[in-house]
Amino acid sequence: MVASEKSLEGLDREALAGRSAGAREWGQIRDGNDGGGWRQYLDGEPIHCGAVLELQELECRSDDYGEYTVRKATGIVVCYEVAWVHGARVGMLHLPIGGHEFSKPIDSWMRFRWARRTP
Image (cartoon, rainbow, N blue to C red):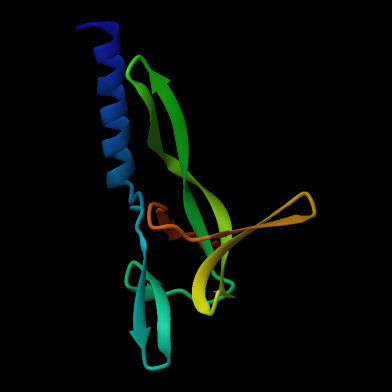
């Protein structure tokens, strides 16, 4: 077995161990309606303003064939809000960094999971 095959085998075991330990999957935020009208959902659960979510991190790589993006197993904690943009409701992500507030509309390619709740 070549060294690179051994490292891949180790990664496979690590990934399987993470799944069996209850690793949470990443999902898309979906639009829907409830009794009060438009709402966004994650894993079938309604998202409320101020909810804390994890946004899946991406890593940009390149090789001889070009550039590509890899989804990482880690995420960054963001706050969910709703804003009116050009007369339409839009899900927004907020992240405070160093006394500054950064905002970004939610895009369809983004993946999320509920942030871990600590007792």
